Amino acid sequence: MTTGARTETVPRTGREARARARAGATGPTAGWAPGHAQANLIAVPAEWAYDVLLFCTRNPRPCPVLDVTDARAWTTVLAPGADLRTDLPRYRVWEDGLLVDEPTDVTAHWRRDLVAFLIGCSFTFEASLAAAGVPLRHVEQGRNVPMYVTDRRCRPAGRLHGPMVVSMRPVPGPLVETARRVSALMPAVHGAPVHAGDPAALGIGNLGRPDFGDAVAAEPGDVPVFWACGVTPQAAVVASRPPFALTHAPGRMLITDVRDAQYRVA
Amino acid sequence: MTTGARTETVPRTGREARARARAGATGPTAGWAPGHAQANLIAVPAEWAYDVLLFCTRNPRPCPVLDVTDARAWTTVLAPGADLRTDLPRYRVWEDGLLVDEPTDVTAHWRRDLVAFLIGCSFTFEASLAAAGVPLRHVEQGRNVPMYVTDRRCRPAGRLHGPMVVSMRPVPGPLVETARRVSALMPAVHGAPVHAGDPAALGIGNLGRPDFGDAVAAEPGDVPVFWACGVTPQAAVVASRPPFALTHAPGRMLITDVRDAQYRVA
Image 1 (cartoon, each protein chain N blue to C red):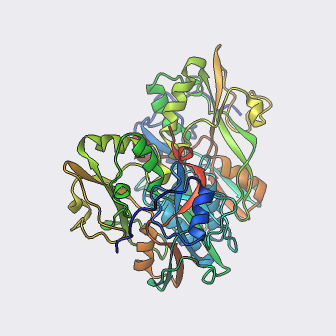
Image 2: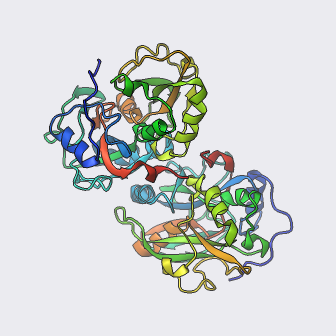
Image 3: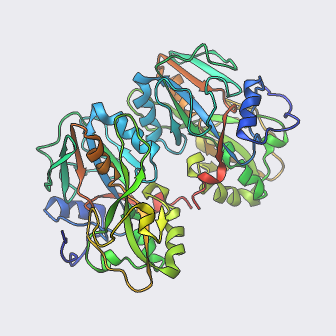
């Protein structure tokens, strides 16, 4: 689906962004609160928490963990005052690996035994890309970033297995190395691209038909650049069928209060 | 205790280093197999594995996880063919938070329900420091790196809590920034220093009396530089008293087959 025109003004702070999501704005959140880290969400019953945490640990490129809640908490140190049940623009509800609902609020779905994982998001380095002169086609075009399921398998963990998902940004050829260098310094939000150039190298057949998000038009001379993506746990949910999970909807992230620079290692 | 003179020749590969440890060499392993990643070890009963993994996730500076074994395995993807029960130079055996033995082989202690965590080690960036011209005083002096328990508390996780441990290297003042820059690019092996200069800023009273390892003599003009240390889980064992744990002995690491460059993000 196409996600419609870009909002006219973007929220400037994490608090503003979360208030807007709580009030019903559905995103996508690329471009929101520039300079603030964004985060993917997956929440599972405590009985599955070790498998999820191990899966993330073994697959740090797509699943860098920024925070883990304690059971019975819907708060995170990344955004004091945030309510993880309401403050993302849109969620997905999963039962036995099937998507059963896509609400804007999961208060009614939040079981008391859930453990929530907040995972780094590549939107976090987009302000740095822009500052380095790398255009963001999806933001320019008012679309969600396109995401693709690849043929690369994640390293399994307990009951969890599945393919790696990537996001794609068309980058002008002469700026691909700049994009690589800028993102590489932020490993907690996926770091360097996993591939640039040939979609087929990742088993992607048609860039015009992303598995999540919107197709984005490349400009002449653009090269498709692929980064590991925090939707990967959702692909693992589909493949591994835990009895229950809540996630964000792709591209609809938690906006945190953490400055993106905090995830830059040098 | 002083750990005696440096071995005359150092092993060159992970396999050579592990064979030497298996044959009885007791380390410390700083300087072994230059260019290869080294790893801290902590193994706990499966029932404690989530707490350990969460503790590491919440404290990535001292506890960056490089690999986690499955229960009933004593192998790691970091060093194919290695046996984690025999291939470290020296171990520590912990019961209820008390150190009860320090053997060179833990085959007899390895319970079938253990899960082992391999954690990044700052020895891994020492070859890069040396290549950048930063002298390694502890290696020059044939000593183990000195380690100190600080007054910084780790973020607790489940039943685990405790202070951060740091390693210290005296670095010539003009090279402190070089040391920072080189290590910052390797966050999976502790990354940038947590402090340089005043030991009291970390609650360290006397550099001449490290909590682990050996005191190392500074040269005139050296500044003490402190990095988060993978002995931190051992301090958590002391503070939190799990019924059982196996760890490496400080400074006696697993030498992996992974090239250190693999942990350099840029």
